[in-house]
Length: 446
Ligand SMILES: Nc1ncnc2c1ncn2[C@@H]1O[C@H](COP(=O)(O)OP(=O)(O)OP(=O)(O)O)[C@@H](O)[C@H]1O
Ligand SMILES: [Mg+2]
Image 1 (cartoon, protein in one colour):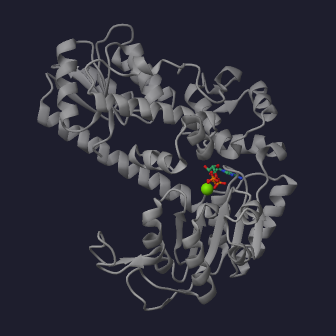
Image 2 (image 1 turned 180 degrees about the vertical axis):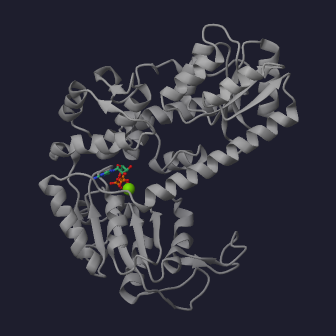
Image 3 (image 1 turned 60 degrees about the horizontal axis):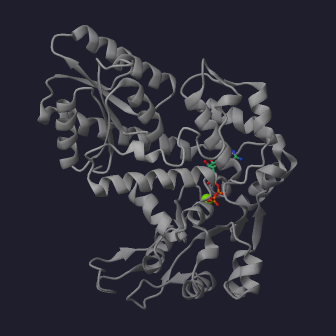
């Protein structure tokens, strides 16, 4: 958790510098604000994990910042700092949704303990949320093409044959994989997922097939691969079109023989798996141009599901928007004009982009309603081309500042591409693999 982001909102220079120095020396990424409005803006834009919030500040006092953040549905955990003897303020702060409070002058050890506890509880809450989401994330949409998808999911769940799921980025391929597994006879066994594009090439082979101790320089211990982990259940290979030729050959053999060998061993191990694979690429073209093995293509394409892009089933947009609104922590609705804007857009990033735009609307909503002004596609107007300069507080270490800039640029590229990582990497001018590495390093959700 050392790379967690902490925002310090404190108007007094000496106190702010001291806190900043202390937290940076502990390895946290620190942002600073010296008045309330700036703190609110930074908290919304950069979504820090924790905010240390002084109560008495110019322009907007701490309690108002706290209330505005809560209304915006912010996920930042706030620790309020109050002057000694103002227990009434502490109580008010807790009522307004503060996570904890500290009395000033702040004791360094106590501060670090409170921050660690806050981060630990956040991590736990995140895990619970993700588990809940995974177990029943329904597919939404009743358009004829989606009805066809549901029918195929039902049929394919009864079978044990390999399924190839096609569709542009963000169309819901992973949800389809989850649904097929959950409705299949293997639902009590694990569904193991691996993304062939996001794992560095050098690691993918041992990730898939495992290795024996000493198989290569860094193989200090024996390791079970994903194939073995999925034994009895399903294995999902995402972005299969990105698999390099040597591994394509190995995968083909594993599928034909239903056995694998760990790296550094030639003992065949039988695996009983149901394979599903997904790709946003044009596999036929990859085959025609010699980048994807034709024999593997036929092995994978036994059963196929194609997910239609969202622009071809705009009738599903209102139901999807409703669905995303219901997940918010407070009751919200959308103005008819705003919904119309959503329905007339083409959604290059498909459902994922719609989800992002609605979530942004939820944060910006006024009085429980998302209006046209709260619909923002692509880059947020608040984050203009050069505004990141203002986000880097004076006194930052170069490395921290560079990371902050990198993060901000990656976030924007993802927004502009509607979450499509291939497009985002193009926008940034870097290879997709490098983007994935950075996403992992900065703890973005993949
Ligand atoms: N029909 C749907 N109903 C509800 N949510 C959906 C639907 N389709 C997609 N989503 C949501 O959109 C996001 C993207 O979906 P998913 O990850 O399954 O897409 P994908 O096709 O695998 O994209 P990629 O190719 O980029 O990996 C997820 O958050 C998912 O929950
Ligand atoms: Mg996916």
